Length: 314
Length: 287
Image (spheres, chains in turn yellow, red):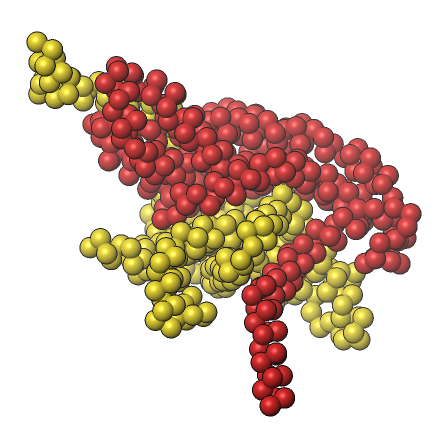
């Protein structure tokens, strides 16, 4: 009798199993209601709305709108501001990829190579500490550093008797380069922590056997550490590319895309078109193109750079 | 003979230097100094009056004008900070509670539609924020919540969800099955298992996610500018933009205000840095 009940609880009859499955489904869906209500409102609906309205001349103000089919996209191709902003976006994207990965990786490797745990702890803490400074403050302090009349760069040039040839963020030709250089030396504390976590997860045995084979220092880094860090590099790389394509915080806070269109990026132009000029149809078209671009690049990165751990599984 | 001895001594010296990691310490020290100098500039300027700013801009000049701080405080910074704290708390609640429930379902319950619904959440990683920014703004208008706290809470809550669900699901899925098995045999409901077994185990990862979400809500400026026209509801980032315009030529109070605006996150960091570093280093954040 007792044996029977034990068997019944550990392996339910098909019918009870089905009941259990549907009861679980009910519970799980109940758990998922808050998530999907929020996501529907603020993610799915706006995304579909943007893709749909990219085919219309919606102003945003009135519900009345007409289908213009691909007119927005035709305008986009001939829009000289879009072309300028695409160039800038390419610069920002490449720079963002480089500056998110390389400095943080270098710092992480150096911290990892220290013997003292205390020293490691303090470096970790100090490198991540600047996240307490609000973004608006960081950008405005940098805008002071770049001030062509009283800023730090100007002062350094004056002190050495050099002549400063550019107005930096006000320079129509080079403003975009000064904008991306903000944050020098670009060591992101959060990325350092992510890389460090990866480095410290590497099996010591692998490193030891590599050492026996004569791989030390830089060669060990190149052939052992780097391939095993690919998961982290991929994550940070994709985020950097996505941020490079869609980010426009520095423009929003400091330059508004100016002088002229010197620092314009698609995100800023999309915002100006939709919010200031009430051209939501056109604005949505810009957003849709960015969406497709990000989708393709993310797929490319995910496909192209597979970590060795995944190969083993195949 | 002597030269070999000298060479040997030189080698040991170099060896000793390398053992102590001097190259690393010097490089890291220089990088830290370069990372921190904008912050140092801000602190330095915050205690100068305009004359000192013109004459001795890059050195510590006495007397220190701490009166810049009360003057900056007069620029409504207090109210902006309170608003930001309110948005952070609401946004956190609306991200973490739904995310824990959802991640638990995806990781630990077998149910109809599990994969489809999970991919629906994950697919949001591919949708850039700028695509939905302005349509979401017009949705806020249509819902009649323009310039209200609810608009901030709901949107921040929603936008924190995909990442939180993704990370938490990985974490919950890694918990040993025995924990759940025995509880289920004892007849515990899913809600009970989640509350008394899973949550206590996941405090560090939940805390880390909450901190990441806090920093991102605190730093939001574009969305906050877009959906709010009420000066009384401005968060600190938007307030700082106005503040910067207001004190454009008064570098002392301007930088004093910047210092004040950094204090809330500094306090948070002081109390949570250990948890933050541990959570980030736990290896749950990867692809």
